[in-house]
Image (cartoon, rainbow, N blue to C red):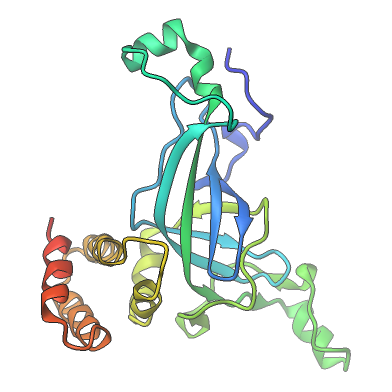
Length: 241
């Protein structure tokens, strides 16, 4: 039997719920992957993949791109050591190993979507009360693309907020505009060129190899990179890998 910190059972998790925010800042957040129920390692989200989390205070849905992931011991004293065992042998001989490791990832915030006020919220404002709305009067259901913003939100998701994989249609809708590329290029703590390429590759695949979109992305990058064609060529070459 696996010994670990208490977590919601897999059956209680919403679809796509993969992690929980454990550290947050204006530009990014650190999330810890939820443990699987079986004896296996937590699934590490791919480099350049899209995730989202809701800031429950405002109801805004925050979009981010994964740029760094690690698996390490849960404490800072003991390091993992080579055992020379296969994954199946680990399950049979050293099952405690799986409870001693954690998988975390950092995601750069690239935009957000405003929550839609409910009817009650709209009525509340029309009655002359102040403009503030609380969690009870706002809906977190995604709304139209006119509520999508490709700049930093007023506040990031808070600690212990759930992190979800983005659905394909969400990524496609968000990437109709390309302002998020500027945010990625300005990151200082990531392998920027590789991240931009991985992010474009992810979107390109989700868009069913839409060449017109890729050409437009290349033009936007060309402007942002100030005609650094060598760098642009290297990035775009990686998109087709």
